[in-house]
Structures are given as C-alpha cells and as structure tokens.
Image (cartoon, rainbow, N blue to C red; front, side, top):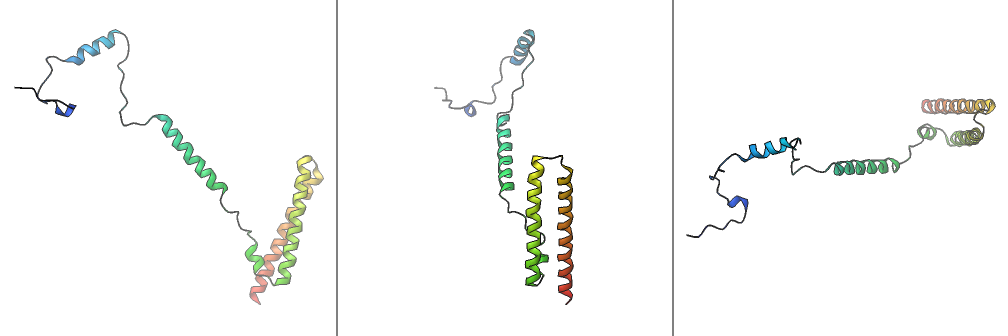
Length: 146
C-alpha cells in the first residue's frame, strides 16, 4: 500500500507522538552554552520602524493641515459692520494707521531691542488700538439703540 502524499503540515497525522521529549535536550544544550533561551516575537507583530514611520506620517499631515487652515477673521469685523458707513470708514482708517505704525515700531525694535523709547511707543500704540476698539464697540452699541 503506497503512503499518502503529504503536501503541507495540515496533511500530517495528528495522532503520532515523538518517541521522546525533544525540548529537554534542546533547552539543556542552550543553558550549557550560557545563553538565555530566546523568545520569538509573534509572526504577526510589525517591526518597530513601521510604527515610528506611521507616527511621523500622522504628524506631518497634522502639521500640514495646521498651516493650511484659514487665517482667523478680524475679531472687530462684526463691530465695524454695525457702524454707519462714514464711521466705519473712519474707524478702519484709524485701525489701519495704528497697525502700520506698530509694524514700523516692531521693525525698529528688532534692530534695537533695548531702546526704552521704542518700548514705550509700542505700549502706547497697543493702548491706542484698545481705545479705538472700545470707541468702535460703544458706537456700535449706540447704533443698535437708535
């Protein structure tokens, strides 16, 4: 009678036991060499570098999305829109002049950070912008009342 052909491990008979315990001999030889018995990583685990690559990809996409987000809208736009046209034009001109002045002050401060007069000009500029914004807000509230 011919022996059955075996094409895979699944074709092997399950009821045949080895004649002796093979692991005790293998383990004894490994320990005799002074090496620890290595534990194998499961075959389904991914290499570590794949995890780091995935993390880097997610970080790069997040960074790109952050820089492509739209610029925040002017928080004063709603208040300006509530003003009558002439007052809105005057307020926009004042804010524009204050902001252009601040740009020039900041450029001068980049050249000479320790100049106390420039620092005072910057503080005064910020206070002036806050004052104009309060005036815009008050005028907008008055326009709503009328």
